[in-house]
Every structure is written in C-alpha cells, then in structure tokens.
Length: 65
Image (cartoon, rainbow, N blue to C red):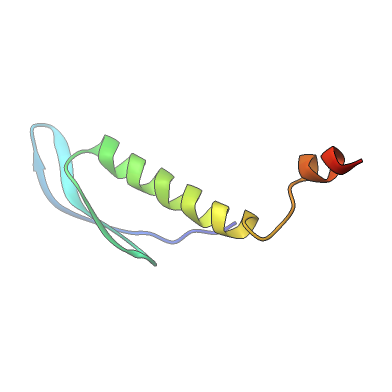
C-alpha cells in the first residue's frame, strides 16, 4: 500500500519539531516527533481498516469450515 503525507515543520523548540501533518483526510498538528509518528501510524491504520472492512480476512474463511 502506498501513502503520501506532507509534513510542514513550523518550529523547533525544546529540541523537538512542531508542525502539521497533511493527509488526504485533513491536517493533523503535532507538538513533537512522537505525536507526528502517532498521527502517521493512526492514518495508516485507518486507511488499512477501510480496505479490510469489505474483504473477508483469511482466518474468517477458515472459521466457517
């Protein structure tokens, strides 16, 4: 799966970045690198769940047998 993010660093204070993560679903401000990574991780998880929401997962098929 391919993801595209635009990251804008607007400041660097207390030895960490502040800025905005822009995705297809909107803008997500962050106050440090951990918030940035969390926002990226959440966005990828949400997009993956949308893909799987209509597909049967391999273990669901086996459960019917």
